[in-house]
Image (cartoon, rainbow, N blue to C red):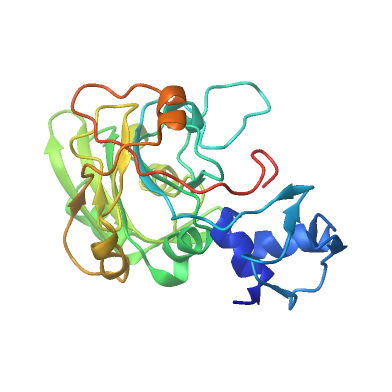
Length: 279
């Protein structure tokens, strides 16, 4: 069946269809030996020879969706030019896998990884309003007026930002605050809380849409959602879904995979995809 190349490449691991278009415009994609630059170009992945940077893109056997409990000190990228440890060091070496969105190097908690570019765009784009929930340790205890300001919105360095909901979950001299939002602007939680006089000393993402990292130790990963519930859950259905055990890795990948800690779920096998480090 013929499909647009952008769709084929997104399913094979390009972080978005826009990213796939850029690969085409740059002349890095070929179909049966011919450079494919036009966005409307179609191909049949089963019968046509589709390549990126000379490496053949194979029909995926099935997408992979992982949830990782990211510890502090890891960069959310596939490869760091400064040589710092990345989240890819904490998950099995699955072809085409990439992190969905970013967490700062000092931020802990849940991050999703997938080789499904269309899914990544669907859950990360602000127009779909997929909620992210964070726990932030802040200096001093925010009062009711401050929490109302966060709900109404605050202008920070030219950006208008507001939380979907906020509450104090622990309070002594300082406080832990739960913040939910859906836009995911750069450093949004830290910038918002600092703007209202409560700088963040620790930040942890505890949920992304319906997924939490409960049951995963820092540095451990597992499958994000059972296939049957994934579509409904990401359409904004309420509730929380924990990481649950899935099928074991193929032997070749299992041998190379980082060893999870006791009690950590297995990872779902992946498809061969785009060349690593070129997306």
